View 1 (cartoon, helix red, strand yellow):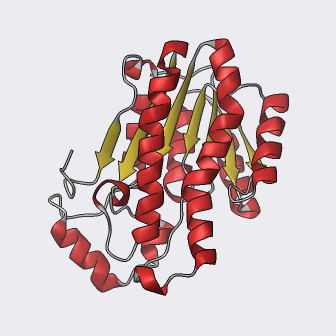
View 2 (cartoon, rainbow, N blue to C red):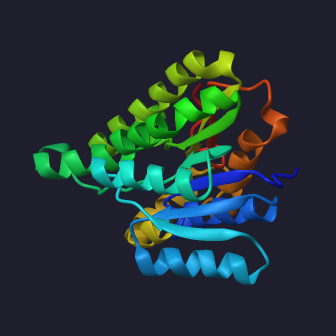
Length: 248
């Protein structure tokens, strides 16, 4: 598959799953905007891609800040044009009983995992509609499909992103825009590294494939939705979980 002469914007692209997605899209020939709040890591990821012969630039964005999202979208469109592929990949959460969380923490989790992607999508969709094409891939989580112990607000936010994906897909299909969702299961990322080892080992035992996912495996699913192979696919939710969650 080739994405030559295409522009891809990937949020959360400084590390983990987002970095792997940015790499796969760049390898396919796309110009990639590495979007993240982490300046040093974002610059480093973009530089690594350029050193490998790809076209990539870092642009900072804070998805929890409406003004930052608006400024980011305007900057991208002025410098690079309208994205052909938008990957809402940034995400973050904490693990604790629901009743121990504060409203301030809830607001941050919901802003980053749900409201931020909605704002960014809204900033780019009108130009995609005018052009008559586009691919939007939202990175949710299996926590949003089946729930997750200790991640109730995060699960709710990701569940909202899944429903947003399906509804937006219905609205934009007539304009040649595909909107799909990838739901990673437990994946070997910096966030997972912070999980206690005994919890990680228990997860591995529960996963039919008996291991954590790799960021590149999630990126492969994104690549399918981003390219022409998914030209007749929209509103779909794909779990990449090693078989941990098989519910529809």
